[in-house]
Image (cartoon, protein in one colour):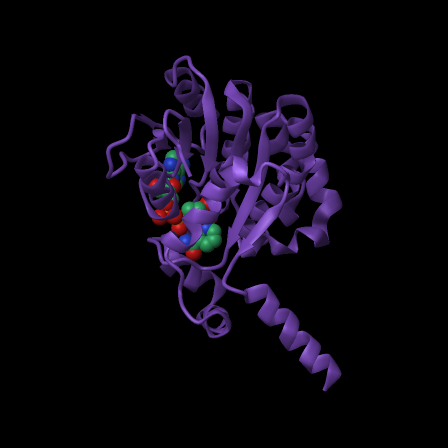
Length: 265
Ligand SMILES: NC(=O)c1ccc[n+]([C@@H]2O[C@H](COP(=O)([O-])OP(=O)(O)OC[C@H]3O[C@@H](n4cnc5c(N)ncnc54)[C@H](O)[C@@H]3O)[C@@H](O)[C@H]2O)c1
């Protein structure tokens, strides 16, 4: 893929999956604008320090980006459940939406937006109506009030806000595609070998993670997840809009096959 002269914003570019995405894009010639609370360990066109859990900090970061077209946005920054319910809600959902809504007018036709969700968000269908309602509440403060009035959002907050991210993506993606020519999709990995892997193991339980590994064969690395992110950013995926791409080594297929075998036994 040729990324020469394309300006791509990558959040979470300082570690894990976001870092690998940024590395691949830089190798392809892109100008990366890294939005992260920490400086990235690679040479990028610009690093804008931001707290994605704080709307004022996001507004300041958007202003600091300056003028000029953007050709892509990778929303990869995220915190694990161990960071606490509030941080999970603000960084993984409210902040991601706030940043995306503010950058949308800067994205050129043909640009892609890729949101890092998770297999933890697979349960979105069980709460689709509720999460659809939240997706309609665009304003940060009003969304916070809506969330405070729905305590279910803080039962397994990490899962709930990944579910909410998948629903929001579907809620707005087709309209943005028609009006702005910008595509938005999600990528959903299972556990990945990054600094937050240990937190995931603690929260989801060792048994659960061991079951996932037995079904998929190994713990994937950021390098297993980054190429699908680049694909969804690229024109090669120009007819893919509003999907959640499972990137989990056959986990869903394995669970489906086990369930079918059990039901036929
Ligand atoms: N690692 C996994 O097992 C796994 C599995 C599924 C989904 N994910 C998702 O993938 C994404 C990336 O995770 P990772 O494993 O690469 O994590 P990571 O900890 O390696 O990287 C997260 C990045 O986000 C940045 N960040 C966190 N909070 C921030 C804030 N408030 N403001 C600005 N930057 C902030 C960090 O500085 C870091 O660079 C996350 O959205 C995560 O939920 C991870």
